[in-house]
Length: 251
Image 1 (cartoon, helix red, strand yellow):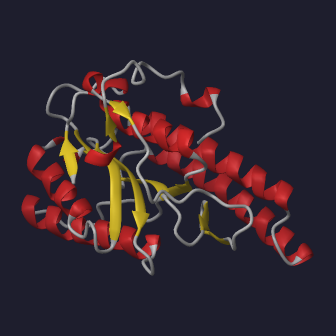
Image 2 (image 1 turned 120 degrees about the vertical axis):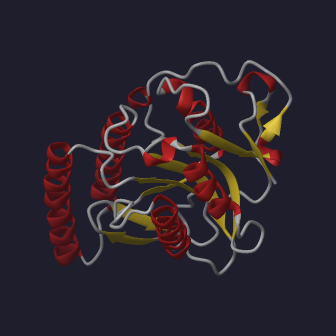
């Protein structure tokens, strides 16, 4: 069960059972579009998807050019070696992280129509994210910002993160368009996702999701946060302000 908009000062973050961390010994599937996407069985993922107009056209065009260059580099490496060399895989991760940070800073400036600023629209998204809780997924945390969504989720056994994300985005786009009487694409086609590395990484992601509205200087009622009850520990000082994400390598 998720608690909506809990007060950060009243809780610490604890790691529940069943979190799946990246395992170098397990089989790994990588597919690439503009960004690399890593998949492992029973993994827990940090996912971000954004409104289609949340990033200015010129910024998005530059990011796509950079991504296309990386895509070509990865394809060439796989053709030459039969698989992605570990050193290049690490560089791919660094690129993915830098693109996410760039997009996140831009999205937090609230470009575009910011349809999710409306509480009724955020409610559609929040309801969709938890609709299959306990059957298709375990949702650990989410935040619905004015123009983007972050979430931390473990797909249930046999469930695909890609299909979950497609379901959330497809359903909410139809519902929001109907609710607002609009037509056309709502979300960017490609989402960002990253496998959780370890328990401290899990806690850092929950903390980031929880603090995203305040870091982006959102006023009351402009964002919706959901934190799973099992992630809420007793009050402590663990939710104090974090250094900028660029300082660390967790992302």
